[in-house]
Length: 400
Ligand code: SF4
Image 1: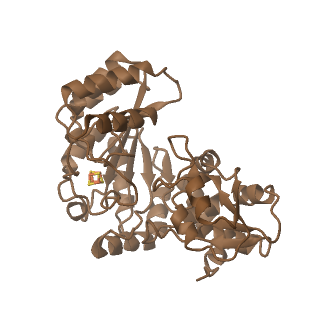
Image 2: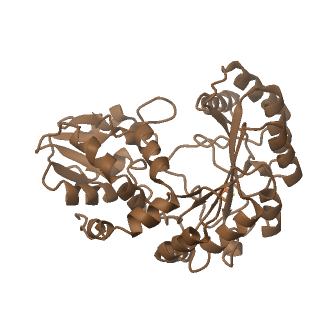
Image 3: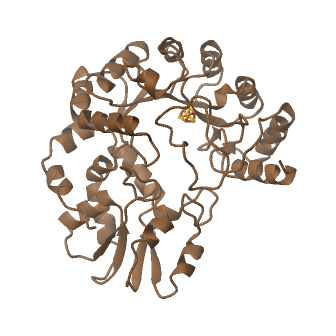
């Protein structure tokens, strides 16, 4: 591989807050739900397996960046490189340790469980408050082998959970007594880690059986969530993987932001499906709502943040002025780019007759804030399941 290309990619990942380690191959865990199965929508580079020498260069580059107390470095490049479970690299634990010993930075990592339990617990004890460890449990139940054919064993996960290292454990509903049983099991072992629950979303390249299982899980989400709610577990419990739930819980903020946006009746506003339903029901005829499906990701995805300019382009016809939420183009590089790498300027050049304006108040900071503020399982059970308004909103038909 061209050394200059490699250096540029590693530097870009570092600039965006990543520690760009690479396994040098496609992830061997082959999870059937993996959202990296098809990342053709964004350009990536096949970065070779990280060597000792490269690691030292990466670490030196990171040390040049001033420490920000609110910033946490993400272990593994994931924007211009393929996502993987980086703990499959035999040196990943050593390098994580070196990072913690030789810098004063925080670190975040996700893994399906390939860390060495004793070592990671010792590191967490030695560096309190600096490790944000998100353990992707996915499920401990009967579907585990099918979903993670080469994943770690349940026994391995139990050892990782049993100690101070894990900050949050994510796992999902796949039918009756799946998510709720996992919540109870995990809580028995670790009362401090955050329980992050919900459903996995089928995207267009996920196989039919896995997609059916995800949808089956969604059908049982309400029952599963109620069982967790009534189990009265001591852990913090969050549920925010489903946009129709998140937007419903944040509806007052959505309406307030929309009302403050000074839009004219003839303006067209780009909205995802779940936002379309809320505004159409609660602010009918206020503007023209331009519903844009997430065609790039496909499947059941319905999320403003993950819309692309090419998704929007497919829905444009004779509009003269179109408002686009800022959240679509807030790329980590600081450029106005969507998740597929298309810039706002490029997009505007496709439609010279249309005037595009940005809804600046609909941004990542606001949506993440609301997601976390409202994303507790308790809110889902009390304010969503307990409120018949959500059924009326979800009954609103989406335009063709
Ligand atoms: S371990 Fe992570 S990156 Fe690898 S296949 Fe599974 S979900 Fe994808």
